Image (cartoon, rainbow, N blue to C red; front, top):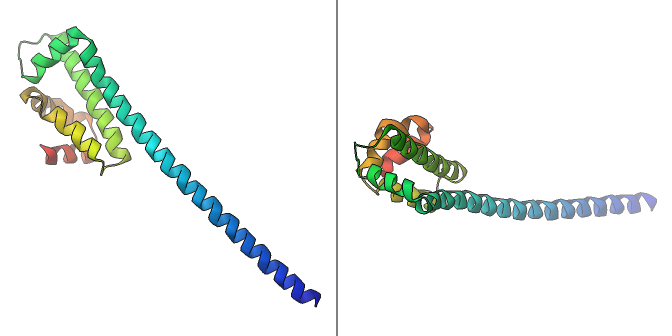
Length: 144
């Protein structure tokens, strides 16, 4: 009789352990989903803040507008500021793409910048493609 009670107790303990494992797994999934949303939000916010920099700095806005039109008369410093802005912008998009390469946001942010003017495409062809990972460069090449 005690042997049967022991077997039933072991089965009950196994079922309880399995129930706890299932519960913990579901909690981990929820935490993972929350983490994904938070990370995507943080990365997107970083891109928006970087664009905000351009809008709030009138000196840079002037440089940016000239550069996207392909103005060859930019000074060395102006060209450098534009290059740094573009590298930072696309590296932020690349981070979002690394995180979720099926994201519509990545496509939207990349297309917005790539479509702003001939100077952006010139920048990408001469510099941008060499500072990003090859997989992301292939992605951008498809968008262009």
